[in-house]
Length: 360
Image (cartoon, rainbow, N blue to C red; front, top):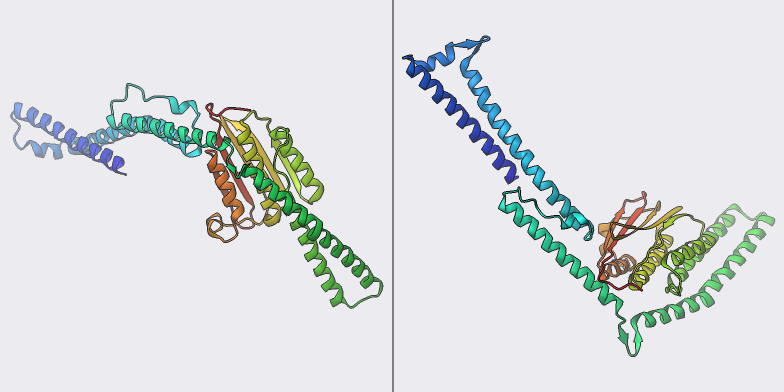
């Protein structure tokens, strides 16, 4: 806003200066030819029925506007690359070659040079922080002789076994009993209210079974077990198709990335699928994983009930998204959530692939 005001003031000053110059030239001319009351001539003399003073004002205004336009175009020319660099940094594209381009020497503005230099420093600091986070995340953290991931995996195994051997089996038995009761109600021509109540109980048990399948999927072993990330994700999605009535679409690129990032991404995808199954009530789910401009881009899209991302961050029990955000932040990535009620959810995760982090 200040820049725009400054350019407008320069244009105004230019108009006034041009008007004064033209008046001085005419005054000098009329004085040389001995013309009295020269200022009256400015009003009396007409060209194409228009007083001469109107032409002087029009030339002055046109000059000021031309200077304002030239300043705007010149400023936009040099501010556009800076705006593009800031956009790339905000979106996490720290490896983009555009960020390595320096301001050309033809720019004489010290402010623009300083701004460009600051952007380079911010980029380098963010890049160093992302690299340190990814390297730190690749190091195993031991607790009483076991890594944190081993402890979590053992606990997941235990919970999954207990849920499968007790609650899951009991839900299956309850569903079989309800099916038998429904058939009996139909054969004996039971009252309509009783049939409706049995149907409602069956729906509740069926929903509980779906919830249990999602929980078991979430608690299943999370290691890739020698498979590539592409193979692990596709196996997870194919298994999901056999258990849940949902339309799946995916495009998974076979990426060569550090194992620490692979493991975290696999866990994040597992968490996202579990959240979608348990809360989204979606009919369609899309998963995309690609490498774009040295950035790993993961997108998970569903057509479910959606939610308010602002409220979800403070909502009690929203540990799934908090856990995902912590995992992504821990490897120097960014998480963007776009969701509207009854319009589905799109989750985009971007992780810079830095050369300093060792591969497998």
